[in-house]
Image (cartoon, rainbow, N blue to C red):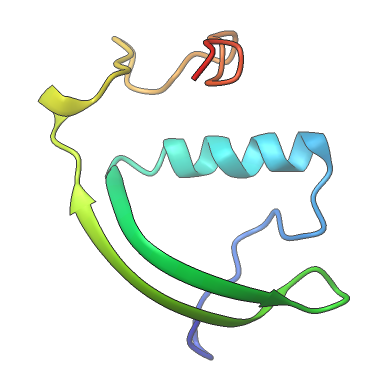
Amino acid sequence: MSINAEVRPPIPPFTLESAIEKVRLAEDAGNWFRSHGNGNWEFGPDGLMHHRYACINDMPIKASDRKFHSPLGRRPDDHPGLSELGL
């Protein structure tokens, strides 16, 4: 992460509610990617990532390749998540 990177709450340490909120914000971003690679992360006592070493390739996911589509644009709040769907 660069020094000028914007910190977007919620930030760690996460509660169940703030983790769900973080995932929802990522889902609502509008650009979906599949990432392949290896990474190592080191976290400090404050729960923030201090070091990240990674080799990752991001591949865009075409709308036709997505498994989940919502007619209203974003996943409805009451739609089951991946765990509930067994994925």
